Image (cartoon, rainbow over all chains, first blue to last red):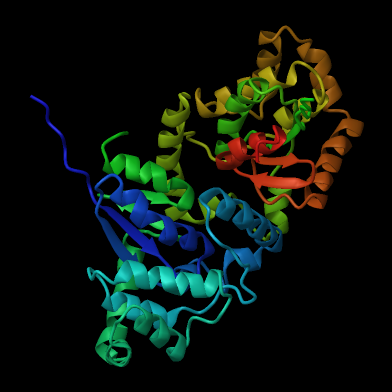
Length: 204
Length: 204
């Protein structure tokens, strides 16, 4: 008898201001679908995590040697994955409103396409993303009720929900993005996406 | 006419206390030889680089969430590359004497085997490496004149040479290890070794 285990879902934590999250946001849906692996999209904010570490900014800004390296690395990584790339003139971009809206999409069909669109605005079009008009236009482009979603996103109850998402990230000991979980096992960084998917497919 | 470019050498900067350097030290010679790529081994000390960044220790110690993740990642990475692995009970281990001796081997045939042996002592046998008897025994195991090399390694002129190696690392804007250079192009981390070798072979 041939027993085939069902793939384990991959949990995908990402932040719209993070350039390495950009790579995974653009790649993950297709890579996971090819192996029947469900993706649980988990948008969150990295800022509170960095503040907890005592960092006032992205490590790519605080450490200029590493920062300059990262921009060269991004050119190569985007070429490797066939993705367009523009180095953002503002980095890291604040992503509060787009993250609040993304959290409304938890478990919804539109979250992956919305997330890719916000990432394109940041890392291909080099435009601000923490802007109501920009987010509304992204939502409208997907045929979604922008005004209604923005109103929900700005409610106190929903702001609290995003803070709770941040607390979950801390409880799960995230220290960067993108981060993947397969069950309780953590895989950190776009470089580990394929390893995480292999684990989901019980291939390793 | 078929023009075949000669492979570009890969310059390999590593530190004996660094667990991700361990992976590259064990892999690089075989991977490079398979493609006729010369390897220029460049041992150095990471401590002064970290101090310059204001860090009093390895980021894997300063950030315990990241640290615990790294040990899980090392188990997976060693399995992936077929390498033995023991989590060192002391981390990071001081590597001053083994680095001084390694620098004597710059351009010498024995440097790769010596480097692998020191890495094994740290990351497989879980023993101190900054110890004259341990280093002497590693050298003797390779048929090298241990007493003579240790005396040279401890001379003031040679200590100064290691400091100058550190200054070269700063001048080339290294911020971690392992780091590879193909000409002036930097590749950081064991995860980028294959990309660096592809560049050497003019494949990308």
